[in-house]
Length: 454
Image 1 (cartoon, rainbow, N blue to C red):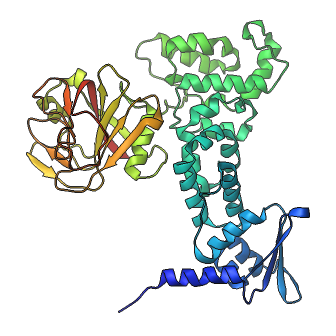
Image 2 (image 1 turned 180 degrees about the horizontal axis):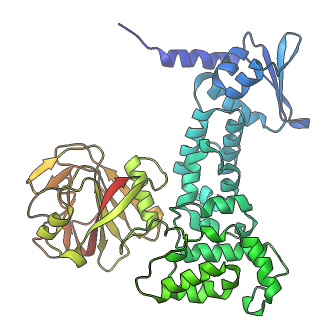
Image 3 (image 1 turned 45 degrees about the vertical axis):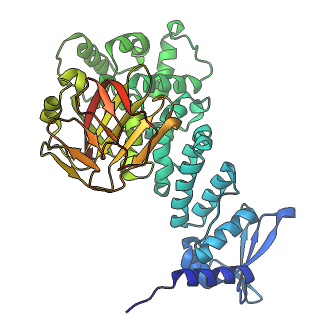
């Protein structure tokens, strides 16, 4: 028989943190009038922080009067004590801190190399300070994008990448960061938006260039070509429509290699032309009339149960308006295809509803249980703050598969049974927490997407 008293041990270490008995480390944090002396225990520091472990292991610490001495002038005493408490007992309370303070705390956790704390601070920021992150996206992205420990914040930035491209600070991006962005295969932006951003950034790098390209001479084009030379191969020109190409790219054609110009022109002018030039393939796109890439990134985060990057491919299996709005058409396209996401557009509104089936649809007239299915709604699909998600209560009716019905979630939490054309029902709510939807909704169209892990 074995026992665990982890909470009791945590409490004892918290007492040690508070009373400092037997301390052998003195840490000076802050400077000048904000300087504070903090006491700690070397055994705990070297065990719980890679930063302190390395310092002790490599004999990088001064010792005076039997005490190890550390100096941290760039860290406030308040933030350091919050982290020190976590080092001792694994407890942290962020509720009284504002967004900027939490961000500073995250940087301190990174400096002291405490991966677990870095992970949890990121989760808290994304969950409870969403608007702060949106408003300060540029300040967050630049210092963190090369650090793999900040993957959650990096993924958040990718979800909100349009904010970065629209920011007044975009033109001050380091070239290496811009290159990093353009190399991504799944940027949540249209290719022409990416091109527009690149042109805006390039023009800002030389203030003497006229903003009106029609007034440029050959020297101006040569200067601009030199500025953007390493970025041009990263643009997916095949993802730009003919109209946008001739309207927005062609004025700058002089900066493109001659072979590339010829290849792109053939691609746009010759139907079915097969590319021979080494062009990057278009970025991953999702074929949907009802939701955009950002919605699917949110769906992916709900599937993983944490905000993250678009780690799935969403392949369109069925569109009611295209394939026929019948149970037979739905099952012909969607049965036995694995996990799926369903999206439906409510008539005369910007509302979308739907659900995720992690199992598969079939026509066996049975119910299935799972804890991972969910239903969702966006009161306004253009306002992501209106999104709601409800996970299965894991009863026997999480997902129901009936030959004469379409998508069916719960006992009757969200479904269409085709008894009434273009009507979805929510009248028997039992298997999911409520989304406060009406009992009956008219639907313009709905789509079903196969979900495949990348």
